[in-house]
Image (cartoon, rainbow, N blue to C red):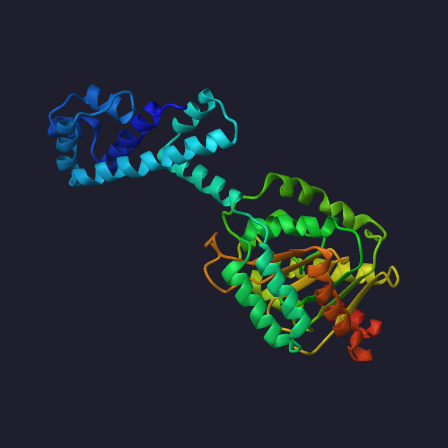
Length: 361
């Protein structure tokens, strides 16, 4: 069992130093007012010793805080370090590695704990949610009503962005025909010639990335240089305003050139359209809702929806992953029916090419 000695020493000392510096007090100022030597206070702040209750009470009085704040800090950080100890066991870290972790600053330990928790919670959608989604496509005729249910399912029972990223990688790797509807900006409404790490961090600021996903993304750009990177046909239905919506979502972000993203998407799609019938785009004036959806073969489907809430809310649900032939077949059938019932002008290559050219030039 890992020990907690270093963790206990890390709790109080750095907080005392932080409060002292906030109040522009020197070591001598605080030590003199609290009735202890500067060397003793220095050792305490550097976590080389623990203060007695009397010393802590004197320091708290000089700093103008309640000693209860230090007691609460001790309680909160004990829970934090117990959580880190549990996570270290799960990660099979030995005691020496754990001792180095708890030697980190309080803020760093909090961030580390938060990141590990988030990565642990990037789950796949549960069976009940997948069954509801499959049933929805089998029974609901209205696209907009279906989309309302999709968004509600995502918000209530969906995956967080980490789960979405893992599902996106799975979807790309599953062989078979693709058919989808893209209504808004997102990870699905992108192409291999875009830096997925930058895109992800723009959509979900300060959220950790699954290392295995990041390794996959690092090679996705290689697909953009192939004559046609897939061995199966791809059909996507888009609203004529899709690329405007993509630009609008990213236009306020400092790290992203929204016009460049739109230009890259349009250029890649036009390049793929020129390769033959493997890749087709339909421009559909009908509104299908706000969520994006894509199926891969008859084995998987991915739905994404990005609420207009605080993007730094890392517990926000943004996707549903559905897998298995029985679950996915009704979704494939409905999407293919939608494609087959589009008016002829929707899939007119010259119309689609002119639409893309507006964003390229």
